[in-house]
Amino acid sequence: MHTYSIEEQERVERIIRQCALCYVGLVDKNRRPYVLPMNFGYKDEIIYLHSGPEGKAAALMAEGPEVCLTFCTDSKLIWQHQEVACSYRMRAESVLVYGHVVPEEDFDEKVKALDIIMQQYSGKTFTYSDPAVKNVKIWKVALEEVSAKEFGVPSRDALKYKDRDRF
Image (cartoon, rainbow, N blue to C red; front, side, top):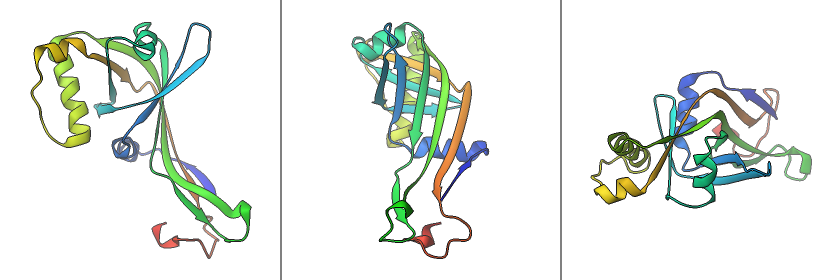
């Protein structure tokens, strides 16, 4: 099985849009990692996150830290030989993003961000009450450094894999 880097921007964007969650990695004051799954929206090389006004994630992001975001498509178990443990692999695609969390405070920009997030999940547009917009925290992460991989790819020489037709 092989792992390949993904260079095509369109493919990176497809992977991001295909994911239901992103995993946000932050570091607290004691240098302890803090990783949590979050809903997100994506447009024009910016990831939009939202949270409540309080809590550990909001507090860490308010400090404007560097952040690492991970996106991973649904993984699929594959194998070459059902009786050989080392021939089992997970097949998936992932994107890793480094950037800086920037809070968005402007009311109209927060509405745009909420629209992007809701479009990601529902394909619909919504209206939002003023209190809802004022009380939500919106965080933007520009894609500063991006890497993407496809892993669990069968060797080109392999003849038999479970569900080989998916490759």
